[in-house]
Length: 354
Image (cartoon, rainbow, N blue to C red; front, side, top):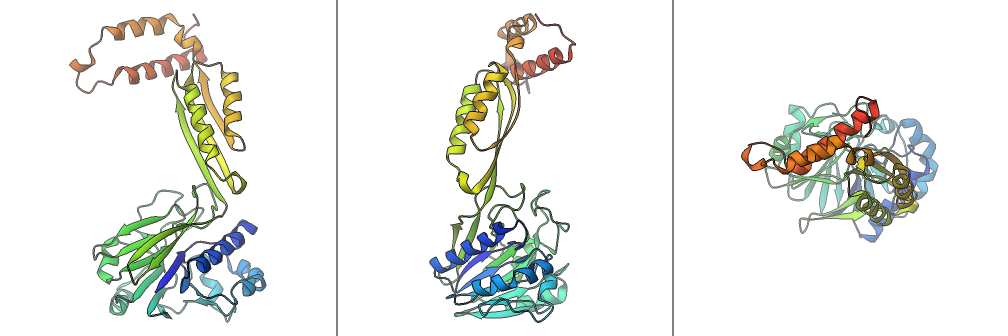
């Protein structure tokens, strides 16, 4: 059984971006010659969005060489409660508490959205586990993801499950959804693999970097990420220290050059201190950043480096033996802290300029 796995499309959110992501997924599924495209929950943003998009989706879910299997997530569970038709290739695994689809020589065991796994469902799923079965569910693994990992979710810890619990179920592959971030894989205690594909399009700044889906081939136990030509966000953060202003500008330029600027929203955030004139640094930073949004919090420190307090402190450091003191920072760290503190005092008027 060969699957292309994705999750958290949220069709209807972000206008055409999510539909374009669906088109990229369908093209990838065709290219990768899979038996099915699996969606680990939140295929739709809401029931209203699903209803509005149904005519367009019927065209997309007709005539494919693979099935599209979706488990309901916390956003779109209500979509599948009625008798809805999205096209002959599309099937929702929405029967509570579990629905199984035969795919090629294997099975996809789907668990629709629920607040808890529960003991009864745990034993049911364990009985269904086999080498030919893949488990697909919308959940929060170990509740160990930081704020924003699920985008703008109102339920960041929907259906929490533990790695140990999934290992006890005995599946070789567990395909998840709900966490929007980058592609994430976790080895299970039974030797199986849990996979979060991440959202196929950046819905918020919590989802940065190029987007991926995952090919899972159960016959040879192979997992392969598939890059998607979809809209994404990315951010570069850098701290400038006196003497490396031009190096940071060069780094920003190289980072932007490596991005797909025609389908990305980029942000460059820079803080710290530079020996360059602030206006000069800002002008060159914006030129290097190109189409990226720039947040420049860098301050010039020419006045600091020329100040007698800095010169006197630097002379004292020449005679200081850092090796004699356990836990003492190195000279570079001390000088950086001095520059930062003196710059703040000068800006506040608590120390006069030289």
